[in-house]
Length: 250
Image 1 (cartoon, helix red, strand yellow):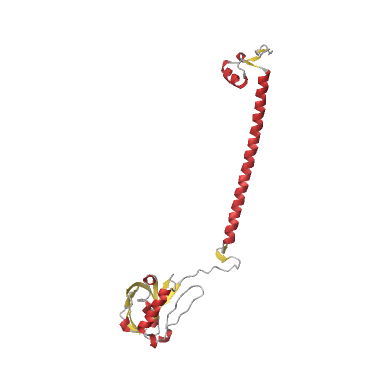
Image 2: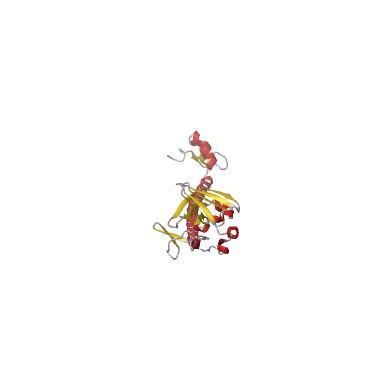
């Protein structure tokens, strides 16, 4: 096909020589002066624009790739930093199925705050202690047996007395006017009196607070144990407790 057959003249390529459906696109893309012809300067301008667009697209792709790599690296650094901070502040590590103390590789000891009391203290200690008492122990009449029971209920008259029932149906009662003797009645009908120091109960997750110590002091003053002889206090290694079990009277 010759230039004349393609619609080329000295003015350029005639847009009219192309199919009619292409005229709007060719006019918009190439015919800058709107004369209906595409001359050499218009073709050159279109070629340069195409080259610039191609170069810009290439730079954009490279920029997006670099941004993606930088973002991934930043996330990795932040994740590693966070893990390092958390790990450095951990006091324990897991070895197999065991929880060990970091650095010493010794098993973790789980502490329990516990307070043990002679039953006579019940009317004198804060009510929050009473609600946490689950276990009780007491001696048999001849001291040959020590009973361990779960507490079912405790009815307390403040600074006066109490009635305690076990889950087996045993009952322990005491009143200030009874002095140092409490009454123990088993579910089988057996009953005896015992020195109040020969009984104990345990409250879990209770601290030996000032209010608790004050209640203990009031109890000892109320019954005047052995003419001023005090129940002994002790402190455990893995838990805090007051242990008032006066074996000297049992």
